[in-house]
Length: 152
Image 1 (cartoon, rainbow, N blue to C red):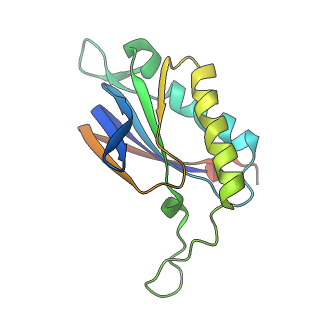
Image 2: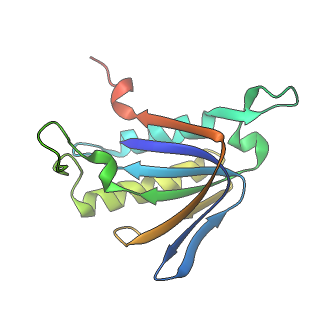
């Protein structure tokens, strides 16, 4: 799984002009599910994001996690994070998981965020054409790929 985590002051996602998810301070998470990803990756990524410490403490140091700040997460499925650009200029999305598998793992990932103590988890609509408004704070943007934690 791949995720782009952005610390935000607010984030909102709309489908057909209607708001389907919205948070104030927290993370906007763009999530790509790769072929071969399992529940293990969903659980690992959710835990890593819940434990990520990129909010400023009283001394202005990035030392607090989302649970300490009471922030929320807006999780958006985004298969384009799985793009393969090794050949040519047109991306191949072959590395992305099939939609039925990806949606199941996306839902599990969101549930795991809640199970890891994040009290507000909002979602987009899987497979929909979404308009996402992101007010990046900092800006702070972190890229996570579960491949880095696989045993070699």
